[in-house]
Length: 325
Ligand code: 5AD
Image (cartoon, rainbow, N blue to C red; front, side, top):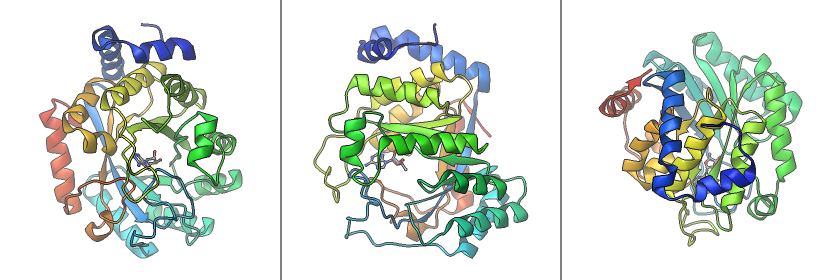
């Protein structure tokens, strides 16, 4: 199957019947297994602050959501949790937050340094929003390995509507700066945003490939009741799977997570995703009291210890005939 498509060709592929699309899913599985075997990488996700200065209309953490109780973890607690995750077998921790100016660039750098000093082998990924190019270079100097910043949608008009305080050009510039800083670059986008089109999703796929992203998360939009988009329909699980499969063919070696949002929408589809190109899963290690406040979209979260969460996710992966690493 060819791996270079135009936006028009990708749009047609996305619009196909289930039957016609099946060869794409199969090809994505073959490419995924050729690169990663049956292995699924399990990564720890620590959500350390739900404060956010942005107004992104789809996100439950946006600063206009006054209903949400806000929390911030102390730097010491963040480091302790990362160490605990490493000692439970995680090889990567993703530190994620809203865009919270409380943590200065220096503080984030110090956090990375402290985690690296305590557990040198633990890969540290930051996911804290938009910064200046020099700041991404500084994170790299402090020992950060990766940075996640999704472009969310590449339809510029839609981007502007959804992000009143940012713009698409700036977003792409950030991703390019992350790449130029020598950080592994994580991107991605949502499926089913209001007014999104198949041509838009095709452009999203090409945008991820153009960076090119080393990792990319694609998840369905889930309406959050305390946002302006609370009454909009959710994104399609089938379309999400199609997008992941096409991304696998566009970027054979990229790390593609099965997003939590897909699992929230449809547990069966989440299982299917590992046969269609995904090779990564993120497991929350956020302390339980905070986990329920990190409400990007509505979801039920179990309160599990880090060890118990790790055990469950490994079991789930084995049940799907895959090997957790
Ligand atoms: N539904 C689904 N995904 C969402 N995100 C933010 N809000 C929503 C929502 N309502 C995703 C964005 C962001 C990531 C952390 O969560 O893609 O980058």
